[in-house]
Image (cartoon, rainbow, N blue to C red; front, side, top):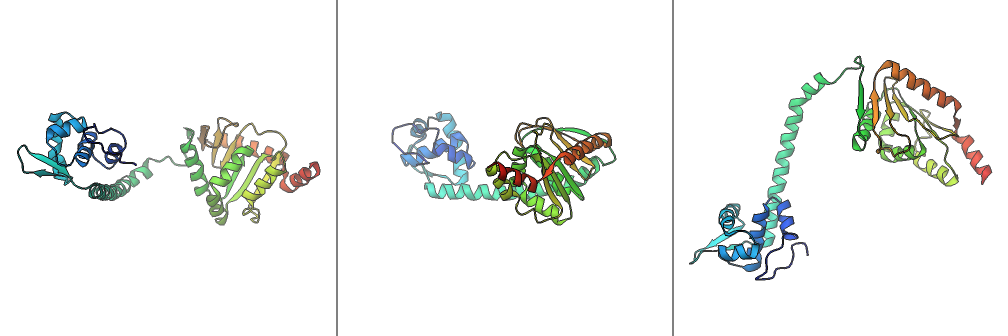
Length: 288
């Protein structure tokens, strides 16, 4: 049970219910005090301290805060006692408060983005400026690839490994389709699938694209050792490792025309030495 089991005259454990309540906005001490009252019923600060393992001085400081939130009530007695509101009411109240705070944060973040959007456009480098940026691995690399496909206008040329191209067609399927509908031409050079099973998988993940004249995948017999992606022949992304997964290696991004020229010549060389998927299918069928 996520809120834990109440046992009278036993200290309230820090895990379970305490963790849930702290996630909902209470401090650890407040959560333990509240749960001690839920388990003990009406109790004095001395009893609360014993049950919650919170120092009595801290109990005296936190009880008024819980009262202000409406989570505890004071019983007029001698000595004074306190009781907790039902756990269901407490959870509902804290959930509603958290939801309202999330909505407020959403509004504040939208204002922040709006206020800084003009500054961002002014400070972003222009295409005329030659830039070299090392993009770290993981999500940042995926974001850079995603942005490249989203902003491509004429072409995307890629030399990549079979492992990465499989990952990319699963991750960016929708983006590729949108780019094709804009008239962007895609050319991929990758290693040939090792067997008929791999070939069948390739056909499955690329089925929707082969009907477009703007889309083509070709293969080479040797392993791909350098992974390069060119966008509109104006930007290049060169990965620092060819053996790792799509999001497991950092990459160098650049719009330097000299580096782009070198990358473009590399792609065209690989494209020239590659062969079409139909040739691959015939070869694999003959070998089975």
